[in-house]
Image (tube, rainbow, N blue to C red; front, top):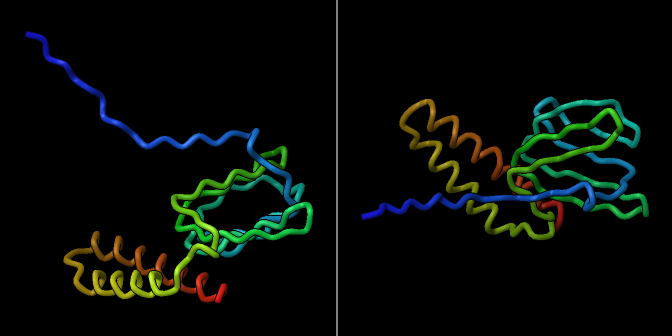
Length: 139
C-alpha cells in the first residue's frame, strides 16, 4: 500500500521589470507620512498605510490606486518597487460597500476580546476609513 501526499496549493503573484513603465512621480501614503517620490530620487524603504497612491505618468496622465498596506522601495538606480497587499483603482471603490465595511469593522472592534483582536480590528477600521475617504474623492 502506498501513501500519496499532495502539496497544498499556494497563491503566486509574478511581477517582472519587463512590465514596468517610466513615470514622473509617485505619491505614496506611508506610516511616516505621505511621500512624494520624483524621478531620480534617493534610495528609501517605506511601509505603506491604507490610502491612495498617485502615479504621474510621463505622458501627463495620472492614475490613482487605493492600497490597503504593503511596502515601497526606491533602489539606487532610482527604480521604484511598490508591493501592495491589496490594490484597486479608486474608480473601482464602491461608496456603499466602503461604508458597510467601516460599520462592520467598528462593530468588530467594539466587541474585541483581547489586545490582539483590538489591534487586528483597528487595522480593519483604519483601512475601511481610508477606503471610504478614497471612494468619496471619486464621487
